[in-house]
Structures are given as C-alpha cells and as structure tokens.
Image 1 (tube, rainbow, N blue to C red):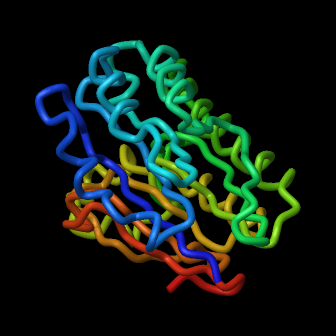
Image 2 (spheres, helix red, strand yellow; image 1 turned 135 degrees about the horizontal axis):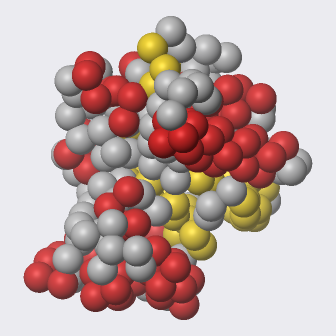
Length: 241
C-alpha cells in the first residue's frame, strides 16, 4: 500500500512564508510523496515563486507539482518552474516521473490542463479564431497528459492536474463557470491511461470526490475544500481510500 499526500491552491505569498511549512511537520511519517495541484502562488510573481520554493525545500520526501492559472498570471511560469526544480520539486507539464517508493513503482503524469466544459455542454473547435485557440489549448494539454500516461509502465499511476477532469468535483461552484474549471478531455486522457487516482485543484467551492466515466477515482484537493494542510490517499492498485 502506498500513501500519497496531496494539496492544491495554497496561494502562498512572501507575507505568509514559513506558515504552511509548519503544517507539514511530520509528513514523512504519514506519506511517501507529496503532490501539489497548482495555484501555488497568488499572482505568479517571481517573488512568490521563491517563497513557494523555500516552503517545499528539503521536506524529506519527493514533491511533485503542476502549476495552476495563478502561477501563469505574471508570465513568470518558467522562472517559477526553475526555482521549484532548484529546490528539488519535480514540476510536470505534459510529462511524467517514476518514483520507487519502498519497492513500489509509482508513475505520475501531470499537466495544468485547461477549461472547456463537459460532455453535452462543452466548447468545440468551431467558430472564431479565439474559440478555436481556447479549445485547441485544452486539446493539446489533454493529449500531452494522455501520452505521458501511456508512456508509464509502473505498479501504480496517478494523473495530476490543476483543472478538473469531471464536473462532480465542481459541485458547489456556480454551474455557469464549469467550462472555466475543467474539461472532459482530461477525463478521456485519464481513462485511456489505466490510472489509479486523479488529483486536481482549482475549484475552491467544489467537492472532494468524483469519478471519471471510466471509473477512475478523482479527488479535488484544493485547500479550501480540504480545510487541512493536505489529504492522504492510500493506493492499493485498485482504488484510493
């Protein structure tokens, strides 16, 4: 059994640097890896990125992250990624990582993802160039996730995104903004990838639990949803508990 800790939407800034780290004390006794589901900063500035890097440096367990929309806001996502990686955080975007956790090979594939909506109420690659670009980005990132998952040959697989693959974990948010919170294309990628657990954030008013059409457990780990520093999920190869 493999124990995974996960959280998203921590929105750190320099003024709270050090506070979140205190809540991570003892995490190595509870989990074997920590997953961060994006929106690690408030406005995506280099200064905030540096604060996040310091917060997750040298925790004593692997830390794997994707970025979120807030982390892109100031067009400093590349600098933030570099600072996180310098601090030992593995940042994924359309790629994967394999971790050996006490003899269990855990594969994690990640992407920020994007919006677009869900079956029957989704955007399409039709109409104005702006709408085509919107849909194309969702399709491109979802395809990247599918390929990263396909390349994994591991005992367990996790899909890590910021945007949601299913609408069930958005329940509590206004339905009018669902198309800006996730896309069914992410769920299609996950269902093609023989995934044991899908983790995302972004939906602060959403719900924790959902499932893809193919039966993969989905968990929304946005900090306002969890109301604790992180959630713990135990993977047995068949389900997440």
